[in-house]
Image (tube, rainbow, N blue to C red; front, side, top):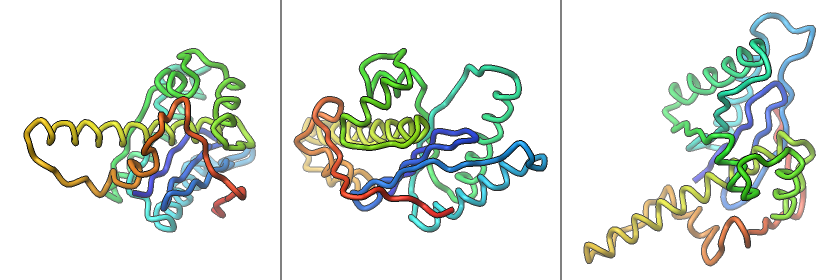
Length: 199
């Protein structure tokens, strides 16, 4: 299953899990000289390109409810609903996690700082260049853990019924990825080279 994780914003952090490998980075969207609506148009164009190029089957993102100001809230809402419309158009599941859930998963602290998130992500073998990229990686790891947990629950359900149950193809790759590991404490990424997406 190919998954895209996004930390929405003008500096949009992204992480892709494709064929058992990670790709991550930060996509710059918008400038002070841009025309009205330009950043959302560019985001939509970039997002469609990523979905097509990497055959994305599900998107996960951080759902933010509190913002520093009205303009920041409007900007985030623009990105979120652009994402929602693209996923709806492409018939791709679009799932959100709260800020606190992501922080608690990656650092064991629901009020972790950006530096603590970066440190936790680096501890797992990644090398993010920005805090936005680190957030996207954390979202991706939580998504994979969530998928794996649901798959394990499904297996327990079939076992309780006395049935073998076939594994859902959508979760098999993530399950294989995490097999034998405790994601929060033991997972280490194997990365030999920094990968980037050309928008």
